[in-house]
Length: 111
Image (cartoon, rainbow, N blue to C red; front, side, top):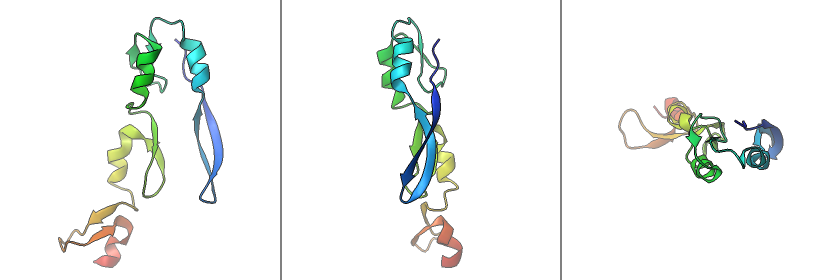
């Protein structure tokens, strides 16, 4: 089965150079258009009966890359909860239950 060819792509984001995986979906499409069984384009090993089903799965796949809204780190969607538990930019409730919402990195200073 055709596998997704991912390379690295660099671009400027907020003045910083950012390197993320670049996925060539057009190559994936041409490699898989006539296959009877298609793997997820993100290689989560889910099998589909058609290319259309594989692309519908793409938006919900745990292997797709997402960017944290707080720290802007790029991670797999399936790792979002794990990342949220350690993200220093995540806004959390004060651990002393005072009702204040504070970024995790500022919690010690708040206490």
